[in-house]
Image: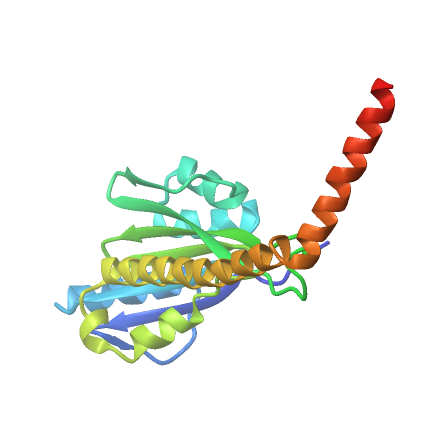
Length: 212
């Protein structure tokens, strides 16, 4: 089944501020290179969600991305890593999301995982997200409101994304701790001990009968 278009956002940033307008991949990079020739710092930030091989290759052709990294970005299920391909960094992050549930005892899934891949070059940053959670719109909004941080370029964006992902780990960990408390409460409740004692006595009687 055909999924929705992979492009989430494509923005051009000049000295910490986003330019207005919509751009294709090629038009965005071309505009950035024009601005750089005028002596200004600029970069393009592209966000993608689960692109297929053809869609990812379109981006790779424009930005000169390495085939091995492109393959990893499409296939997903990668371990966290940081690799350098010529002048481009390829950074893989695992994302986590807490799955709400009525009962931790009956829950089939508590945490779901996804991935964010980041390509970082001199004048571009490209994110590829896998999974329904872990959207980076909040990161972009915060960065858009912080020109000083954006003025630091693509590597500042990479740092902000990594910081966002790690912060979410802490949030999920805190929620899991509540689940562990709930499990302990159920396991060590008087009713649970009573059930355990009845099971133990029943087992003991069966054992005695078997030995008689």
